[in-house]
Length: 321
Image (cartoon, rainbow, N blue to C red; front, side, top):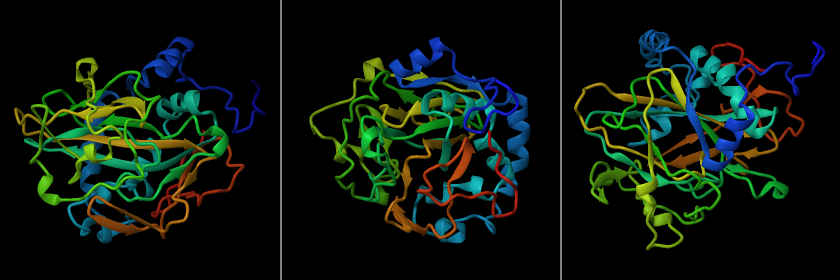
C-alpha cells in the first residue's frame, strides 16, 4: 500500500495477527499473552503514574464515582483524563491486534482498572454481551444484521504481576459462541457478599453481586476442568471476547503486592454505546455520562452513533491509527 492509504486502511499493522493466530483466536476466544511494554518499562511507568491518578480533579466521573458506594465505577474511564492511559488505549501493539478481529474502524468505549488486594476473593465465572448485567440497560448494542456477534473485545494489560497466587484471569476456551447467562435478568446488589461467598471450594464474587443469578439454566456449572490460567508479567496483555467464560483466582495473600489489571474495551464504530441512557447505574453506584465520549482509535466513524472524545479532559490528543 502507498502513503495515500486512508485511516480506514492503515498502510502497515506491524502487530497484526498472523493467519494462524487469528484462527486460534476465533477458535478459543482469546489471544495472548503478548507484550505491550517491557516489564521494566511497565514497572517504571506505573510507579510514576499511580500517584498522578490519585488526582481525580479532571476525571470524567470525579468524586461522584469515588463516593458512590462500594463500586468499581470509580475505576472506569481514566483514559479520559490520563495522558498515559489515553496513549495506552491507542497503542499499535493493542489496536493492530484488535483490528484483526473487528476491522479497521474501532472505538474504545470503556476502560477499567481491576485491582485485587491480598486476601481478595476471586471473580465469578461470567460472560458479557450487552453489559446490561448490573444496570438492566444494554450498554452496547450491535446492529441487527450483526446479531451473531456481540460483546466487546477486551484487552487486559497487567500493570503488576498477575499470577495464580495474585489472582490472574481464567478462561474456558471456546465458550464465546454460546451465552450461558441472561443479561435481561437483574442481579441483586449486596455489599456484604464481598469476600463472603464460597463457590465450588473457591472464594468468588462479583463486586457485591452473585453472577449465578443470571444463569439461563440454574443447574448449569462452568466446566472448570477445561479452564486455563492466564498468568501475565507486568506489561503483558491478553485479548479476549467478553462473551468468553472468564473468571479470576483469589489473591492468596502470599505476597502483599496488589494485582492490578487495566482493561480496555473495543467495538466497531457501527455499535451503539449507552443508547437511550445518560447515567450508568451498577455495582451499588451511579454516574452521569455528561462528560463521557468514546475514543476513535483506528479508522473512520461513518455512522455517527456515538459521542466522540478527541482529547482528554486535560487537553491531550488521543492517538489514532
